[in-house]
Amino acid sequence: MGKRKNEEEQDFSEDDDTKELVDVDFEFFDPSQIDYLAIKRLLNQLFGWDSLIFGVENLTELILSQPLVGSTVKGDGIESDPYAVLSVININVHREHPSIKAIVSYLLEKVSHNSAAASTLGPLLSPQALAASNHHTGLIISERLINMPPQIMPPMYKMLEDEIQWAVEENEPYDFENLIVISRCFRFSDEEENTSNATKPNKKQKRKGGEIHSYHAEDECIAQVGVMQANYEFTHRPPREPESFGVDLAGRVTLFPRSKLHELVVSLQESFPPQRA
Image: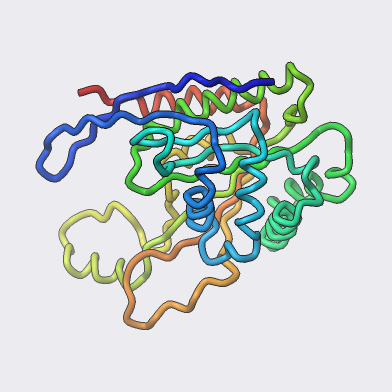
């Protein structure tokens, strides 16, 4: 089945420090081989310190090998580097792929200490379930540069919803029962919270020490449709220096039924409508 070849354009406006409006045209393209290095960088960003575990080179090639689903966002034509990527991989079909095997093993290990998450995710990623001919699980790969507006996400997820449906109608292996999203979260370090409390004693704090926050704004919408969510520490996270400040990054896995995908799209559209100048 041929994918859409029309490029969808959307204008976004953002306020900067001078409160001036800047118009930016973003275009949506199918992932292509010219995006290899940029997508690999986005995957390294997504998986953080643990990216070496998954063989992001092979995972990038797998994403690019799927002509039916997925999109990228660019700002300077098809030859430019993508600022964001969204795709989905059938974990069952690609269960023997080195990167997918590594991701499955990684996720099972990370949720093993969370009984609720393990009891939900474990059966879906068991060898028996992955070898089944139905009830397949999809792995959503989603990452964007941090300075990209979240307004790009509603059209990307809408296209993904449509592409999955079109692929299913063509009897392609995208008839998922569940979808898994790997993302990140963070919490402010105790040192930063202590400093903030000391310098602003008369102001109510908007964040609490140790409170976990979503890394991307759209992750809050994903959490709303999730039936399971677990946060975990990176395996290869370097130790924090005693005098260091900033945030502590961690990983997050969310599971939601494909039947909730349209609800997610609507939530994203309502949360991040286009900002017109």
